[in-house]
Image 1 (cartoon, rainbow, N blue to C red):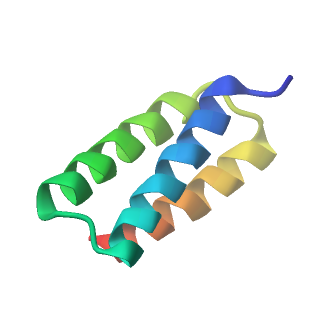
Image 2: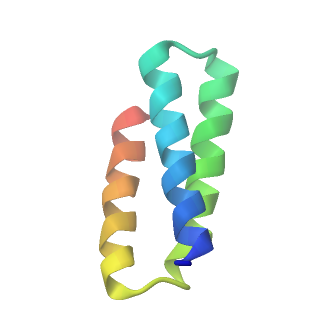
Length: 66
């Protein structure tokens, strides 16, 4: 099935990125960023090395959005 926390983190990062690209409200963007950051943090400790590498890339996406 895969790592559920990793999958959720990926989905939340994609959602945040989509909000920034499509012009969501400031509150929506800030909320989506916070949720994505929390999801990344939760997923990191329970991930394989390869997943951790991808999570670092997801973090870079969030960093660019801020």
